[in-house]
Structures are given as structure tokens and as C-alpha cells.
Image (cartoon, rainbow, N blue to C red):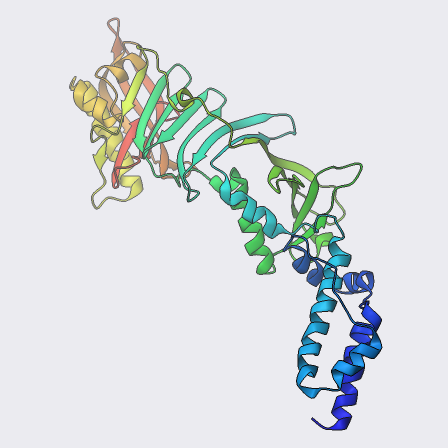
Length: 406
């Protein structure tokens, strides 16, 4: 290193050290580089701001020795970093970053949430969900009006009011957990932000709003977005308290409420009975776990198998083969279809119409049919629509239902 290079290095280090106090305008740097500021402060923790620095004359004495010059330069950089951290923290908590919530969510073992839809006050669903140490769902309870569902060990038990209950095998990914679990929602937002698909604005707590507010807008320009999700985050635990989704058709239109997920609590003690489904003794139970039900699709199309199972069920009822009818109706007890017909006995099939698909998570058709029945010595024509659905946990098999659900 020549003398000119020594002089330049002296000037750089002297500007950084300058009698013991780093010359750094943190506020200007924060305004000019907001993303870098959030990244730096997201690491949290306190950094000591006490950095012993010699007076200028001592500093020049040290700098006369070329061997110590590079070590001194490193010390200068450390001093600047320490001063920077001191300015940022200064005894106050670091600025919020989405990564803090992602990390905080890793330790959750249970959640209790309420889902609102249609309006801000209309309770649509309520969930109690428990997780293992890897974040995988181990059991849940869902209440949606008169429909109560519990799931555990791959078996879903669902009660439809006081009419009927259905037992079937489904995996723990059957539900749309990204709509309910705040951890999955936050991870998705983080991935979409990294991919440039959403823009996230972070508002720190204020006198009017004590929670951290995240406003995620679809696209790169929030002013033209048609979709927006607002998350409220606890500033202490960094856990999500509420997610609210809005939408609009035009840029100048007011945002309209669509759906909200409110977290009632995290990691609360749960009564084990909450995950058990109590059924009245006289309730009809369709057990699709202990037995094979419905018919195999084989090489038929979905529409063809839908027509076939309706014809077979009507023919079996006419032949008084009640065991077969129960199997075709998803494992119903013998005599189930006859009770639904209120004592009318089918005598002749007139027609089976074209299946109409029903929008659902799995294949489902509504099949119109017309048949002759005899009741009280009189014959009459009945028209009804039977529902044909794929059997959960029994791939390639289909079953009948007289109700729209199950």
C-alpha cells in the first residue's frame, strides 16, 4: 500500500470514527431505504451502543502502523453498525416484519376460529383445530349451522341436524385450511409477495388501532387492485388476530366485505369431548368406513355411472331387495328408501333423465327420475331428483342420496 492509498484510507476511517461518534443520519437512511430498514430491524434483539473509541491523536498513532490499519478499519465498520443499531433500537422494539408472524406461528398447537360471511356479523362457521409438533392437523371440529363435523385418524363423522349422519374416510387436507388456518394464510402472502403478486403495506400500532395492520393488495399497484386482505396482528405475540377479505369491481368503487376469520384463541385447553360426535339412537347412520358401499364405476363415464346407479336402486326397491338398496344409498339401513317414500312402493320405472353436475369439492350429480308407485291400493307417478356422489375413501365407487346432503 503506497502513501496515497494510506491517506485515502485514513480519510475514510476518520470520517466513520471522527472522535468517537459515528456520523450517520439514520432517519434519512430509513426514509431512503425502507425495505433495507425493515429487513435489518426484523432481526430484533438489543445491541450494545457502547463502543470505546480513542481520541483522534491516539487514532493517528495507531494508524502509523500499517499492520494494524486493516484491523482498525474493521473496528470502524463495527462501530458504525453498533451506532446504527443503537439509533434503531434505542430501547424500543424493532419494526414489524411479516417474517416475525411466520416464525411465531410455528409453535401453535391449537386454534379456535370463527368465520363470518355475507356480513360482518353473520357467523358462518366455527372451527376448533389441533396440530402436532410439525403443524399437521390431528383433529378438528367444525360447526356450520345444523351440520357438525369432527375428524380424527382419517375418519370424518358428520351429523346433518337430527336427520342423518355420515362416516367416511378422508385425509386431513380435505378441508380448505388456507381459508381457516392463519399460518397457511400468512405463508401464502409471503410467497405471493416474493413473487410480486401482492403488495403489502404495514401500519404500526397507533392510538386508534393498538394492533399491527397488514394490508395485502393483489398486484403491484394497490390503487388499482380488485382484491384486498387486511390482517390484524398482536404486537406482542406477533400472532394474527383477524383476517378480513374485501373485493371491488372498479378502481373507484368502495371496498366490499366478503369474508372474515377471527381467531378466538391459540393453544387453549380443549375438552376431549369436543371432538366426539354424539348421535341419537334413532338417527340414520351411513357407515362408509366399515363396509363397501355404492357401485364401482369401471369403464363408465361419470354421467353413465350416475344413471346406472339410479336405475339399479329403483329396480332393487321394486324387487324388495332392501339390503342392496341400503348399500347403494351409501350404507343406509334396510328400509331407508321406503321410509323416505312414506310407504309408497315403486312398481315401475318410467324414465331416468340426464345427470346435472353440482359444483362441489368432489364429483356430484343430480339425476331426475320418474317412476310409478302404489300406495293404499292406488297408483300414481312420482318425480324426484336423486343425488349421486363419489364415495370418500373408496376410489372409483359412487353412492346415492335422497337428500341434497350428504
